[in-house]
Length: 240
Image 1 (cartoon, rainbow, N blue to C red):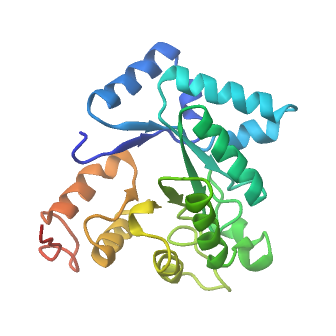
Image 2: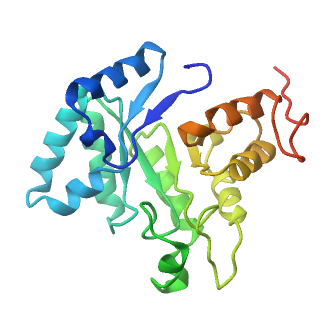
């Protein structure tokens, strides 16, 4: 498993539904194959529902470490959080002996089951932000926060895209990010075979992608050149 998968992420707070013994079993299984384990964006729930956020975050991080998690995702798809506060959370995660993985996107309200029409109704161009903001945040998190890798949310880029009344991927956002941020520092959410097919075609076999567990075989075969669509089958190569 570790050759094709480097990390396992639980969606949102789904890990909270598991009995502790079963959750530990899954985490231990991943670790036995050299796979790190990451939380989903549950910290949004902690920040928005706790009267004492500092104490709640400390308890959350302590419990995650106790259970064996390696990576804590820090996402704010449904929240507005100042960059300095984001950096303080990153520092707290690192101080707890865990790895912070910020998730950034251009679409406010990203995540969950929000439809494209609902996102568009938020106003402000569908509540999307300028790609420059994403690039600036990435730079700060890497340079000031010591972040190893940043997740780029797919909503507004290759999922639920509605910009100015037009539907279509925002590949310009991806190019803007990779024009400044080293490719090994980012991981792109690729929620559909057409999406990860495009990423591998455009950026090669080493591009970091987050896919659904049901798509692992397709993606792994695409990277190895033994699967693909008409534009990639037999055309994905490397020279090592």
